[in-house]
Image 1 (tube, protein in one colour):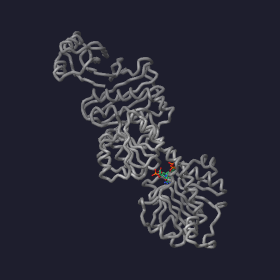
Image 2: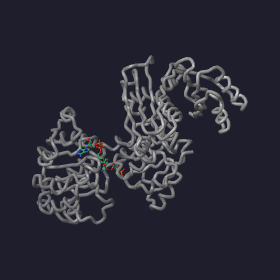
Image 3: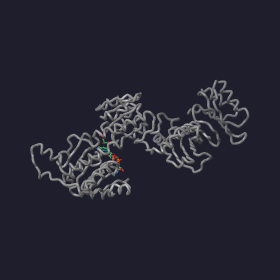
Image 4: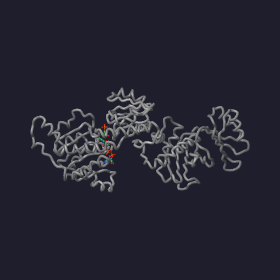
Length: 526
Ligand SMILES: NC(=O)c1ccc[n+]([C@@H]2O[C@H](COP(=O)([O-])OP(=O)(O)OC[C@H]3O[C@@H](n4cnc5c(N)ncnc54)[C@H](O)[C@@H]3O)[C@@H](O)[C@H]2O)c1
Ligand SMILES: O=C(O)[C@H](O)COP(=O)(O)O
């Protein structure tokens, strides 16, 4: 039974799949203190949050079983993704479900800002009638500068175009083609800042975007500019915004998000030009249902080891590529495991070569599987998420190469491991109807399926060796299921690879090593 802990308010309808799942126990506890969260997280297999729960390194330290953190929304800046990755915890979000709601909220804020609606409302319900004080401006003909033209920025652009605004955008990843399709003028950062009658930010909060809008940037703006932030507190320097409003440079600001949330009695709230909402961008019935459905499904997939799509700390794999790579994943992992077990010493370099038709694809996910397989022979708690991090941490060099030669197979994966003591390679392929096969160990051709208990023996090619090995195993009651031998020349070095029905004791291994003509004996478990 998987324990799924939900610590922020999520839509009941949205999490129905989790509630219905027979293999899931849902624990819903919102507004936890840090101490309570530290306690609850210990036994959770999955954690579901919005932006309120702070999933810090301290929290993750206590998470002994956690496999996945699901963020029912977009921004993951409340989650220590780096620590989660190190611990092999997958972080998934729901990037699409709240796009429209947030774009609409931003638009609502822009109109409210243009027409002083919150200020006029407050005054009117106090019995005042100040028609002159709340004269606004039209959106038509004004320039809206969008910083970050991703999902939300793009939806906002469409709506602004419908209101006959000029839309100009800065986004380092925006192509000319996409800008053209949206009817948006692509600009550099300074140009976008200098041109806007309204400036709105829609980037994630990162090291690069923290205080992207700072004192110097406010200097470049048109006098009377209006500023919107419905993305993340911290993208705009709040002190600099305060000064820019006081100086008259900025005519108004609409804020849905704050550097510290909740912001309490923020100095900005003393300025009548500032309107605010309590992080409501995604707070619609539709968006909350969407994100909760998306994240619940992802979490279930991950817990059940099924394919998933929106991991924040894993490269995203297009569905078409995923289905092509899937049959190779097990082969890749087994080759990594096999290679790591036949080479003694500390891992230094892992060179992976992809040959044949497979070499035409993006094979990075398979390299990860190889790495996972190889490292799991030496380290505990290795998984697909943390394998590259663990390799880097240990100074293991990963070399990934592709070859146009097919080596006699339609596709081939070769894993070469170099340790501080020696170097060995293992190649494998997928055979129709037979599944993964190991086809070569170093220079020796063989054909064996990489599974179960294997015995790898290096020996001299001389009469009687195979018989002696068989006799020892027989004497100890070890059944041989299959056996493959390989040699380059008569009387030279040779290898034996045996499938055995159970594991060997140290005693058996020792006896085998003492046999005449035997150079090394390694038990491999796959
Ligand atoms: N207020 C809310 O309730 C609410 C709701 C949803 C999302 N958000 C916030 O909005 C952000 C954007 O969401 P989205 O779904 O549009 O994300 P997105 O990833 O689709 O778009 C972000 C865009 O920002 C661009 N970008 C990154 N760095 C940049 C930089 N330095 N300068 C300019 N552009 C840059 C990216 O290229 C991308 O196109 C989220 O990260 C989240 O923090 C807030
Ligand atoms: O990043 C997001 O998706 C939004 O900020 C929504 O946050 P919330 O789930 O806390 O409303």
